[in-house]
Length: 213
Image 1 (cartoon, helix red, strand yellow):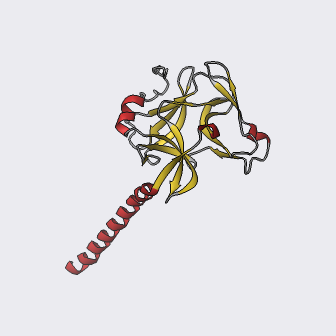
Image 2 (spheres, rainbow, N blue to C red):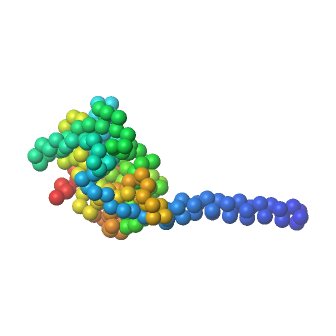
Image 3 (cartoon, rainbow, N blue to C red):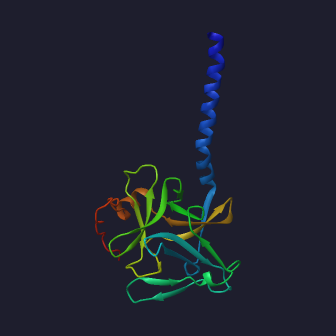
């Protein structure tokens, strides 16, 4: 039995080392990521309607400078800003960039990548659409509000980012890549204290949130 236990112990030890390495790999990669600012006039976060507005996804559009215009904003005073996605009418290769899921964007707070722990989603809140970073592992943790449309109309709507939030480009070992961050410089505990909202209740009216200045 003693002879048998030695290979088993070795096997368990090796497995533990491999698993630890796999768990540490995403963190190690995240530590190599940095960010660089994006000209806010060249990027827009949009609530994109699905099934005629039954629900919405986050879409981020980027304008390549000196190329054909990718979208047009239709401001309706103090209410929501409608977006005309011009890029849908032409081959936008080389003129526009479009991100529609977590492969193209994620959350970064105080220099820390949170894409593994939070997902970005657009939720309806009474007569508003709100962009949240919602926890994926600890479902009891509150979501973080990032922005809102300040009203609802049909079609594509601009998401106005809350104060302190901005879009930035991910860099890897100093080189820019296509991934976009929704980022804030304050520590995460500060964001949870000032930008959180109670989870949406299934089958019940959503509580109103304080109006963002």
